[in-house]
Length: 56
Image 1 (tube, rainbow, N blue to C red):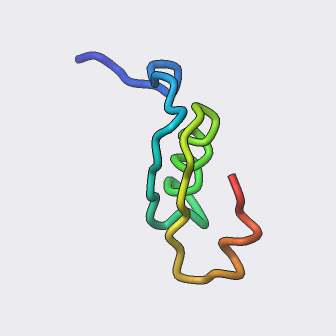
Image 2 (cartoon, one colour):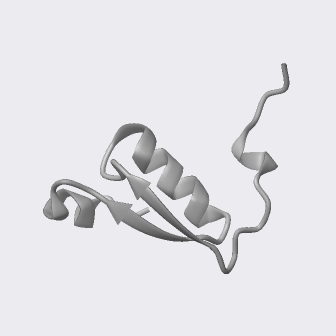
């Protein structure tokens, strides 16, 4: 089985990603990694105040 890692992601400049649960846990990590690779990330959160504090 091959393993994936953030290092395997291509340049995502010009792409938009919507991440649910982006104010904590796996969603937050996913949003950060996508942003680090150039994607415009839309954070979908239940609590907007918490989401504002968690910008990737």
